[in-house]
Amino acid sequence: MHIGLIADTHIPDVANAVPHQVAEVFNGVDLILHAGDIFVDSVLDELHSIAPVLAARGDDDYGMQDNRIDEVQELTIGGLSLYLIHSSQYWAHDLIVHPEKHALDKAPDVVVFGHTHRDIVQTVKQSLLVNPGSATFPDYQLRPGSVALLTISKGKAEARIVQLGNI
Image: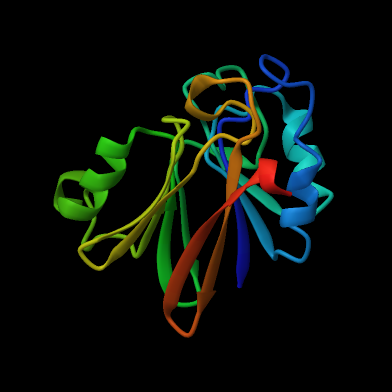
């Protein structure tokens, strides 16, 4: 399964729309996961024109009442457990290192998070930790950002960051 990962779009606060390059990068994905700070439902609608969308509620998404959004999205894809959250890298890392503190029997195989506006793909223990960065406001700067592509196949997950300014 091919999954597009996006976070921290902050629309219309820092950008008027999802960057047009996102549609090109996400062409052919089976699912899009938004790791929060969406701001408006129209972002999810626009992404849904590419593929089905699920999102984690960001700390700036108060008042959004879209059924595609939840505090945490817990998914099983291709036999792997995936958590989609907005919280900080510390909390995401803690899900993997100390799953028992989060009432989990074991660490998720993949944790996708947002909030920091900084992209990262990192293996922690046996789990994959991914932040696609911000598509519109990387490092809290107004410039082209990044998204990520996650592939889950044969019980293995791989992710790569795509810089939108390079497209």
